[in-house]
Structure formats: C-alpha cells, structure tokens
Length: 327
Image (cartoon, rainbow, N blue to C red; front, side, top):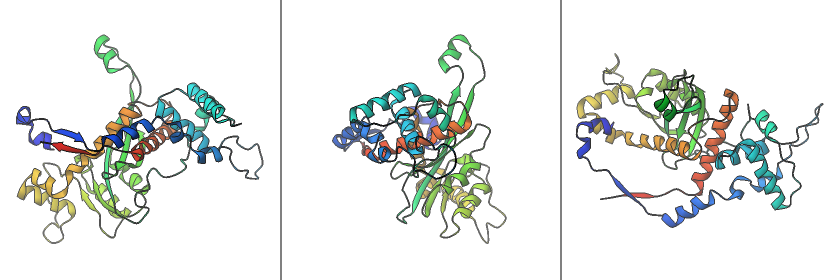
C-alpha cells in the first residue's frame, strides 16, 4: 500500500538504506548453514531404523526421520536424489557408521504423505501470544522458462502450485504451510494454516485478497476468546455492515478509520506494515530453497514444500541479520 500511495512521485522518493548491526554473528550463521551436522543430527542417526511394531509383514528398513533427513539435505544443498544418496553414504563413511542408506527410489517412493518429525515452529508452545502474517506465492512445477518464452516464443503447458504460508513477523520463522493447486483461493487456506499453529493468537495480518467474512469467521472459530486482532485492508468500495451503528465488527472499524483518517493513517495505527515481513519470508524461500518444485505429484510436492519450510526455519534459528535504517 505505501507503494501505491507514493506511486505518482515514486521517482522522487530515495531508496532506503540499511546497515547490518550484528555482522560477525550473522556471518558465522551463514557459514553454519553449510555444516553437515546441522542437517544430519545425532537424533536422526539414533532413530535411523524404525522401532519394531510387532505387526505382520516385513518392517520398513528406514524411519520417517531418515527420509526427512534426506529431504533436508537435498533441499539445503540443491542436489538431485542420486547425489543426495551419495552424500549420505559419504557422511556415514566419514563418521565410521555402519548405516544403511536409502536409495533414490526409496526416497521418491516414501515422499508422498511423509509426516514431519516435529512442528515447523515452537512459537506459542510457552503460552505466549503468536502474531501471524499470512500470504501466498506461486511455485513452478514445469514448463518453458521466462527467457525461453520471450526469446523463442515457446509455448506449452505450464503448471503452478500455490504455497500458502503463515509467518511469525518477530522471529521470521514459518509457522505453518499449505501447498495447493493454483485453482484454490487464498482465503480458503486460512483455517488449515491456523490449525497448525500452537498457542493463542495475538493478531492475524494479511493483504486485501483475504478481505471478506470467511476469513474473519475462520479466525474467530480458531480462537473465540480472547478475540484476535485481524488486520486486513478493506476494498476501496467497502461499506460498513448493517450493524455497524450498534455492534460494529473489526472490519467495520477498519472501514470507518480509513474513511476518517485515510489509508496511510490506518496502516500506521494497525501495524499493517508488518505484512511485508511475510513477503520477505517468501523471498527467502525462493532464494534458498528454489522457485520451483522438483516432485511431480501433488502429495510429494506437499512433502517437499513442508520440508523446505523446515529447512528454512533451521537456517533462521542459526542467526538472522539485525538491520537498522541509515539516514
């Protein structure tokens, strides 16, 4: 919204400059992202083989945590399955472990429906309020690239998936994720995202695409009491409800504040500017994990997106830059 507000004079507005205040710590965190012990943990090695269940039939040779570890290595280092298999074998050899390594076909076969070992984030586990920013972006599955289409006029079927994220704006961690086809609406995934978050909610921030009664209802059903602050900009043609005079809803109060003070004043009063931190998390996902999906079936793609968010959270916990604006 600030961009739209300043669009007529955008060329006169100088670009903001920032300086990282904790560069030594952040530099060490960036180096640790390449540390293999971050991705192949002692807990994963200890639980590499699944416990015996006593059921009939041949038991599985590898636990879900072992398959998840392979996914983490594959996405963190951007390698195909065969090279990931070789990387795991070399790690086991260097550690001197007699550890069976799943082959690439086992990784691919076990990917659909894989359940992650733990939640994406521990936010809210201590009972504190969780503030959530919700947004969605597109991930390419296959099709001609932009350069090929522009250069040679290549045409063909392109397929995209929608990645819906709930982000903690304070810590920068991804709280929940959902991957759907591009036909699914953004607002329809609010309830599934909120169900994945532990702890009470403090606020939910989203852009104008989520404006509507279904989103407010999904938030109130997730947590009726205490009420959650829902910060969504109403459409430019929005009008108060029939009960605005006697029992105004949150949306009615947003509409009235924008009419009285303007959209920029509403943004400052409600803290809507924090929504940009959700877009920052999406940019980090595409820069570090990738702009596309390697799997070809939707169930496997859901697993890939979930493990990608888990990998991004591990990088975030290692350390993030603390930047301050320079005048």
